[in-house]
Image (cartoon, rainbow, N blue to C red; front, side):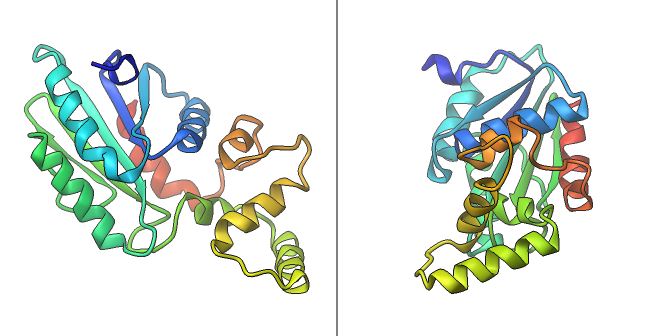
Length: 199
């Protein structure tokens, strides 16, 4: 097995990419949760393959917690169904409702779809909620003034905001490491409740 995917901890968090790894590592550190392993599956289409690899690696004598987190993008229900199917094909139990966990003997599995329950979007949309309104208004005005065609508004808003911060960060994940996001903001309450299962 690729060393990157080798299981080293009983609490495993699977995320879409490296930015998510940095974000959740910082968030879990903020929560005081230790002894976890975050795996970058390198794209939402790879959850199925990585979960199958993980299922073959698990020690039957150890109780595990496996959490999968991905963006809803344009279809919340579709994202949830995709992860459910991936867990099922790997032989794991399936949460009946998004953003919750289910138990099966020694394995507890959870699915969280960002940004929030039944909302389309991505992790950037969640972080945007922590930005003060006056700053968001300035960013919106800049976007209108620049008259640029923006393919992904949430990512653009984050990049513009980060360009104004001290210290500077070039990505959402790096900004997490530099304490740019307020993890105590109310927008993170549901996610925080979910992550407490990794304690």
